Image (cartoon, rainbow, N blue to C red; front, top):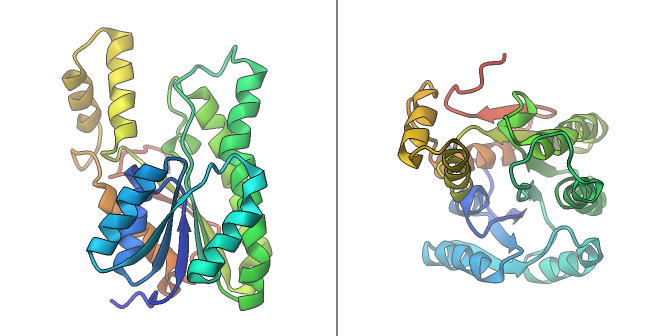
Amino acid sequence: MDLQLHDKTALVFGAGGGLGGAIAKSLAGEGVRVVVADIDEKSAKVTADAIAAGGGKAIALAWDIADLSLIAQKLADIERAFGPVDILVNNTGGPPPTPAAGQPAADWSKYFDMMVRSVISVTDAMLPGMRERKWGRIITSTSSGVVAPIANLGISNSLRLALVGWSKTLAREIGRDGITANIVLPGRIATGRIVFLDEQKAKRENRPVEDVTAESTGSIPVGRYGDPKEYGDTVTFLASPRASYITGSVVRIDGGLINSI
């Protein structure tokens, strides 16, 4: 299937590795010009170089998405290199594991700015151009915790859920402009983040990490962690004209893990 994405431009945050890197590589494989944005410039360059080595087009861009003062300048840099952004993939890091109760107010503010306010601000900066061109894709990666809260991820569950309400509301406002807005959420995908969470759980419970991982994969109907490429390919489809009738949705990429309907 031709996804009809040749010569589109995508901005992918957190693309220095993990899910963001997989998304960037998948988009590039469909002929998309990809801006690989990450707070770690070296990681961004690794992904961009891998895309270039495979014959794709990509540039690495150091960008701390929480710093709102950078938005105008970074978008100007992108326009000079690749033209206006057609596809925006919002993908931020998460807070450390914490219970919901008793967290300092400063931590709630810090992670709200990093995970929510930043995403909304960057998207708002993109929308006028997308509306003018009558085409755009806004895809926001969150967490399975927004539909089935994950124990000891109190801050993450709470703040990521705010993005679901925002995206659904936004989708209704921009649909007639040819722009879609969707949420994608991973189950347990084999990235460094999942390794970290397994290690933290093993430490808390004084168990071998191998036992924790085996228990975790045993609870997934397909019996394994997901491949980051599977996540990236789903996002690429949602970014394409083929998915123009999908908007305001929450798409689970979880191997059947989440029990709720």
